[in-house]
Length: 301
Ligand code: CP
Ligand code: NVA
Image (cartoon, rainbow, N blue to C red):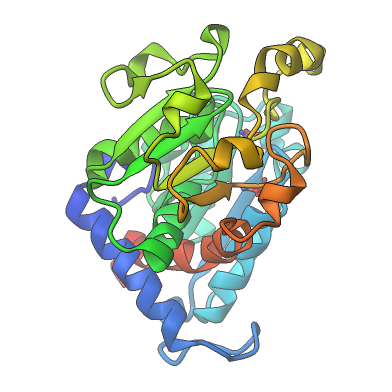
């Protein structure tokens, strides 16, 4: 079974093939209306379940549109509407869903939920974000980087802010795609220890971004973080805001990325988000293309 669970669990040559195919598929349908079918219909007769236990705008819509463009059908399900939210085990849910659908995408809280789904499903499972990782996002980010700035291999990527789930997938990608990753943020919000060795830390954000080809940040309070942490996190992270001063310490052509949704003028200023180096909306668009390629890879299409 070919699941897409995490970037470090997918071979570098497969990751490269997925990125290359996503760019080719994007180019092949350039200028067409969003609802126009792709010429080949690799997901024809395929049914895809999209399960969300957390809110989503980009993941929900990009997966749904992507499946339809490839000729398949979707069911968008919220965990609370399913028996999953009322005590049915993940294992039983996975076995049952596998009798109805050809592919499962799940956004959930605990990584164990994703792992159980993958273990007990007899169809491929895709990670649409957990508390620990967000691999589909980083595939879109790598695609976006390469479209704008060429191969990511050997380049310098700087993450400023919370060492969260999106950072974790960047750390996995740094190894698989062979780029340099610097984390700059406060000690209490360091990435989890399991990621040690995949990145280096520089506490001073201005030193960190020197020579950077890409500066990335994310929300200071993620969906799984307690809202009560908001004020403390803001105090801890204020010095790591991505603003024009920080961007001007990076390479002049350095790209700026944010997976969105953003809290404008917290983790990044609107001036940067809407500025010439920002590629945030290309990133959002590329979720569609990258995930289409991931789904094809999972299904061997
Ligand atoms: N970046 C991202 O995953 O966005 P959504 O939460 O809107 O899906
Ligand atoms: N770190 C954020 C990413 C949202 C796409 C969260 O988990 O809420």
